[in-house]
Image (cartoon, rainbow, N blue to C red):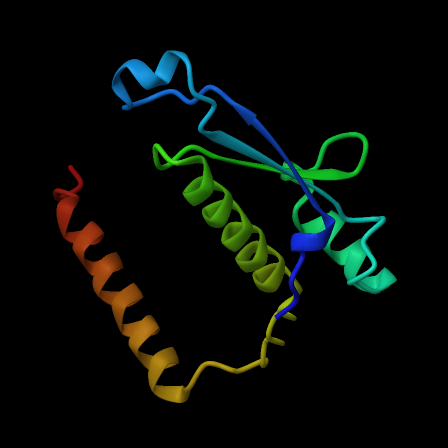
Length: 131
C-alpha cells in the first residue's frame, strides 16, 4: 500500500458534537486535501480511474476532500483521515471481478415452470363459476 502522507495537505475547523467548552474554541475537525492529478505516487491510468470512482468526493479543481471529526483530538482525527484515504484509494484501485456467464440448470427451469403453473391454478380457482 502506498503512503500518501507527503502529498496531503490538512486544514482544521471547529468540530460539531461532543467536547464541552472546547467545541467553541478548539479546531479539532480535520479536512484532508489530496490532489490526485498531481500525485507522484500514482500512474496516469490510476489517476483517471480514481477520479472516476471517487468523483463525488472530488471538487472542481480535482482535489479529493475528506473531513474527519470523530474524536476530540486533532491528531487522532488526522490519523483517521489518513487511514480513510488509504483505504478509499486501495478499494477504488481493486479491479472488479469479471462476471462468468452461466445458464440456468434444468432443475431450476422445471421448478420455475412448476411455480408458474401453481400460481396460475391459484388465480384460476379464485374465479367463480360463469353464469
